[in-house]
Image (cartoon, rainbow, N blue to C red; front, side, top):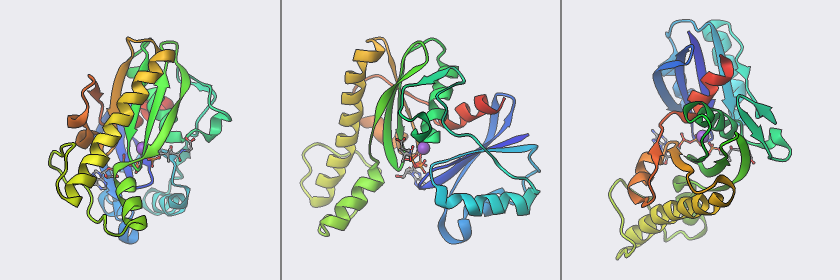
Amino acid sequence: MRLLCDLGNTRIKWAWAEGATLSGFGSGDYSGVEAYTTRLTGSVRPTMIAAISVARHRNEAFVRFCEEQWALAPQWYPSLREGFGVSSLYEPPETLGADRFAALAGARARFPGQAVCVADCGTAITVDALDGDGVFQGGAILPGLSAAACALRLIAPRLTGSPGDRFYAAYGRTTQDAVGGGLMLGAAGAIERLFRDQGAVLGHDARLVLTGGDAARLAPYLSTPFEHVAHLTLEGLAVMVS
Ligand SMILES: Nc1ncnc2c1ncn2[C@@H]1O[C@H](COP(=O)(O)OP(=O)(O)O)[C@@H](O)[C@H]1O
Ligand SMILES: CC(C)(COP(=O)(O)O)[C@@H](O)C(=O)NCCC(=O)O
Ligand SMILES: [K+]
């Protein structure tokens, strides 16, 4: 079995792949001595390790871990101009985050021939336009929920706390609720606006797909129809290795 890993800025996510079939999904953060390693230690030896990373400073410890655990070096999958059904208009194409490219490859495989807007709600939120011919038309990057909360706290220390798991209205009556509503509705509104404007290059039958660590938390705030695909980036990486 292959081990697929996605090193994001907040967390590493992984899955085991047998062909296109994924199982054993896991995730871990980078706290302590790279806390994720305790969850992967003792796993069966993968036949190969495929990885993408947008957190270059985490790569060295990851490579060392793979070497010590399984005597294997991960194979890295960067963004391409062309490949796996995706043709990228990003300039230069290799500067597109590898997670964004993999998610597009995942979208192409899951929804062949269809226009898809991929909203990946992680450390950053990326909203990417993939047309029905597989052309990546471009996208947008904005702060993710935790990043936005953290930035507010840093610059305006009275704005403590970060959004919890309950539903926030647009009319918060405490600082906490006002920040919670602003962050959640702001992010959801931004995704919907970007999706709407991407209609100009995607056509109006495009589908909206949400993925990433905050997708489930943002889902109740969207009024546009969408699909939640929890592991789209790893699905794309599975396509890229097979
Ligand atoms: N167990 C968790 N640990 C850390 N963040 C989590 C967790 N579950 C959900 N999140 C949320 O998911 C976001 C990170 O999403 P993720 O897609 O893993 O990001 P990245 O790919 O940038 O590392 C965080 O900003 C946080 O709000
Ligand atoms: C935009 C990102 C920071 C998102 O990363 P993430 O939130 O998944 O950690 C990452 O895809 C990245 O570093 N991209 C490189 C810049 C670009 O895509 O233009
Ligand atoms: K990501």
